[in-house]
Image (cartoon, rainbow, N blue to C red; front, side, top):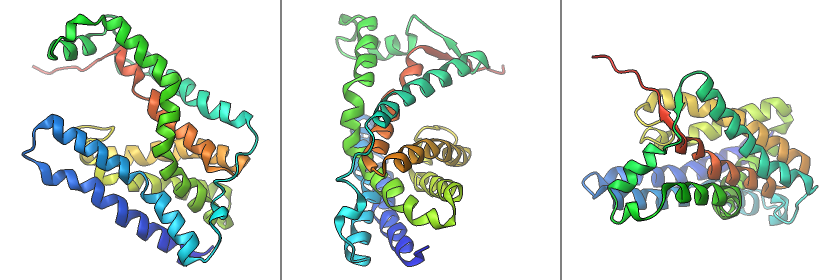
Length: 257
């Protein structure tokens, strides 16, 4: 295992991404909508931290050709179908489990969207059902492809660089370690409410578990194609569909009087 190269990669990755993750904390008094837009923009750039680090480490530190990152490789095409559809299936299963265990209740009246539209100008002029249909259509078709532009930044680093450099430890150790590091990388964003709003500490542990499980799938795709593109497509697909179940849910929150 090339500890020096891995150290450089991680140092550059966190030096790029964490300041971008933390910058929104400087805008505490900013109007919420503007702050959210700026935060999303900064965090989208932060997603390229691992990819930039992989390029710098490979070309400048290790003095190896850029092609070693395998961006010129696609691999067996049927894995791209898995990358596109598997996140949809997993998200659907997760939604069904949420209903089964009572975490959420099915809400075909789309209360969450109706409430959001009610506070928006001309929000009631568009049928809620049409909005839901468009969101689902985009999530299943164009959104994964658009998301690849940002997800590739992460996957070029985590699966394209870090995973292969950890493989000398054994495949499962490499997948586990890369997943844990990937989860920890999200820490500043999670503490600001990413994915687990209201649970900054517990959310970090949950994010690590999530990244290890999801990273196992992404690693499987990468190891069978030797291409970061397939992992980026899967990453883009999961980002596109992960929020869809919320459209149909009403959280089952028990209040204590």
